[in-house]
Image 1: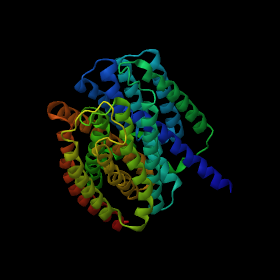
Image 2: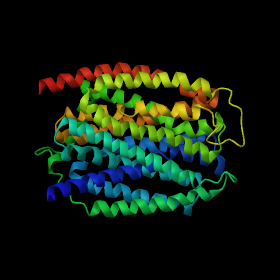
Image 3: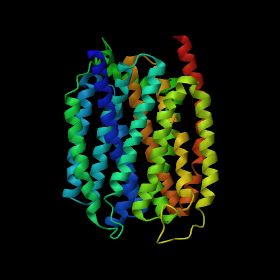
Image 4: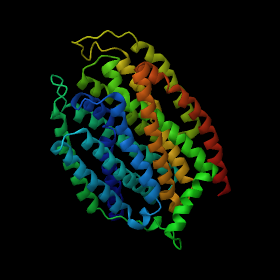
Length: 415
């Protein structure tokens, strides 16, 4: 019974830290919308916030992923949470676009520490490929619940009557309190991390092992798949609030709330994918998912054209695209956890930290690229065309998934 309780506490700690960072990371779309109104920043200027968030994730992951097993996953999570607690407190105390940049820089640095630690810990508390895949989907589902809560939380602090009002910054008092409580819970949760240590290796050898993973077929094909997936998801998720506001002509608070449909779809898709992956092979499931996403894009975006502004718009007479387009999240949802689980379970446990470093690096680069491209196209030719552009990486993703399937099968058969 003690072992069960111990395991439950570790899993809850991982869920909690992922939930907290989901709110912070995915607030970037909402904050991009708000800084345009509060600080007079242009769309292109505001889109740089995605880079302030994602590039530090990539850089820090590259530098520390192979070191974290030595520093300790629990220590890494508490360090990351401590950094963002201070950054959240700075937002209402020193309201400025520069402070916003520093916030997302802090979130990026911290998430690099947290994600490598969380993903590497999953291999220590699960005992089969199916259990690993199931837990990864539940973990990513919890992440999307955090995103959903974040949209609701931020929208409740937005004043539609005064779009430039700094009242939305008060949300960061609550977030600072949540991150501080998370530090306390993780500090009180014991965790045996000995399985992550590679006996007899030096730090330099661990770092070189991570670099060698990139040149193996399973490494470079996987990172291409992860890059393309995150490019699609972040490009859409980051700019959906602005799309709702400028293309569908919804009020600012409603634009943010409507984006929660996308987050809810991702959460539902990931929670259900756990059961789905236990019954079916991941490869055909993911192919169906990518094709379904493309179909929904082609069905829903024509509905967004020619929408007439309505100052009295309500949830009952909002344009159909408000509800239909975000449902792509249902089919996007299983892709990321499934490919992450497939690559991690094909490798020995002591390499999970190094592989997770690569996952985080290329996910971050994909997120920044997706946001910048979507933002630039959005400003140049409009939001509808920007979202049509997502069909290109979807096509490429189908190709990389095929190659990735072949490389993981080869490794598993060799074992």
